[in-house]
Amino acid sequence: MAAPDIGVHHQSSKASRRINFRPPKPQNEYLWVNLEGQNLQSKTKIGQTQSFLASKSHRLRKAKKLQDLKDSIQLSPAHGHEIYPADRKQKSDDSCDSNERLARLVVHRALGVGVQEAFPVFSVSTNASLDFYFQYYRNYTSRMCFPLCSAHIMIVCTQTSKDLPLLLLVLLASAASSRAVTFGDSASAADVRGQSVQDFLALRAQIIKSLQSAIEEGPGSDKEDLIVAIVLLCGLESAVGNTKAAEAHARGLQMIVAMLGGLDALSHTTVSLLIFADLVAGMTSNVPPMFQIPPQWEKEVFTDSNLLAKNKHLNRHTVLGTAFFTSPWSHVIPLDLADIIRSLQQLIPYHEQNIKMQSHSVLENDYLVLVSRQLLAPSFKARLNPFQETIRISICLYSMTRIWSFPRKPCTLNLVRMLRESLKGCLGLFKATAPELLFWMFFLSCLASRGTGDFAWAAHGLKNCAEQLSVFEWYSALPIMEKFFFVLRESDVAKDVWDEVQYVKMKSAITENVEPCQAIQDRH
Image (tube, rainbow, N blue to C red; front, side, top):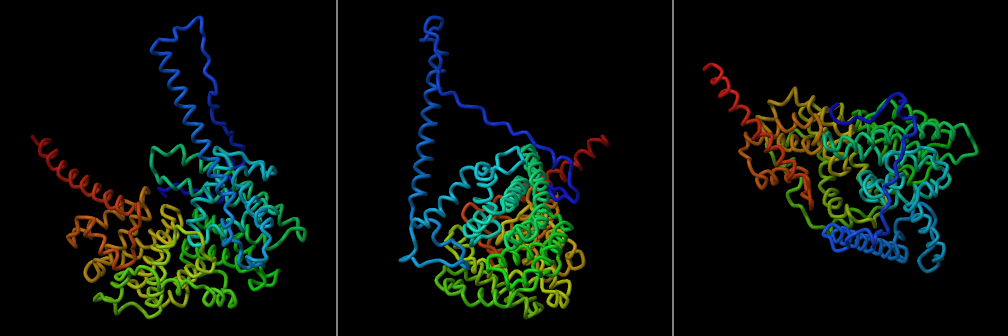
């Protein structure tokens, strides 16, 4: 695997060792001047003085801005009000005690300031500070996994971590694994990637040790809190491609859930986390979900979520997904797959317009999970021919790349390889009957695999499709992708990916022209 596969099947010796953390070099607070032995008017001394004053002034301004930001966050009475767990009993705004609400916020803010101070039991040491990984999870990783309710999940996890620090270790390990694949195979980021991999292994070793201790404690520990930790660990193992470990944790999870009375005995948020982790595992291994959806939970998602009602007021993407129903090959799409596509036509605009907001219910995120989960139904997959199966895998790839932002992760790269394998038997059919659909598939593969060893295959396929369709500019490529599933975002990497493919194409053309010339020179 060209991408850094940070999944491991055996505990590494590197994982168990303590990694030395070097604190940052302290800033100089004073400039020492020798009044007798130095020429204060020299250019060198004047430059040193000006540099010192500029640096200190910059630090003071930065510290003041940071303190002002902290004060504004702590004094905001509404911040975090809408993201408390919906399944826990709350008082109305009129009767809710403001002191109690403030106390909850203080606990959450303290975690962001000093993880090791809040949890001194942690014995693991890493290249980057634990505070850094906590902030990384809150600002990036949680939004990748829970795009419409990341703040809600952060509140649930941090509150649970007070009684079960193991859960916080899982969050930190998730952040380290995400950071490890952020830069792909870039040689310039090899050191950062290597440090994050080492940190992930060290944190994972501590997680396994803590998990074993928590299980051995028996009745003394809160089993539902333990389920939350194991669920997130299963999702983490699946995301990094460590499918054997994920399956082992899932089997143990089934036993614990059964002892507690099944999924119906768990809170809505716990079931939501479990169903999402089950989805990631299914997408990674192309297998049916392990857990059955509780009817009551599903009813709450469909009846209580106001996502579709809100969707009526969104800016419409009138062409989104229309090519699935208006193309010459549209008649081959089975009815159940067509229903999933229609659902995504409604959900994707809502997701794209609200992805940066944090005032959503966990129910709305659950809606996205349920629709994507339908793609893994065994009875559905069994009826698909190779052409239809390739379309199904492509929609799965879109979900993992654009709905859940998992590009370059092993779970998404596995889908790229599934698509490559599926195309082997029907590539000619796609080229002859659905070249624009094939163009979209290869572009998704480029987005998912950029910076990894799988990118070359995807870029080569996209280059050939572009030549077949006479598409040579970005403004010509974008309308094709929008007819399937694609919404261009502000500061989107999609344009960079297209430019990179064009660079590869140009480099390939130069190489092809140089080789014949070199051969002629050799003959002479």
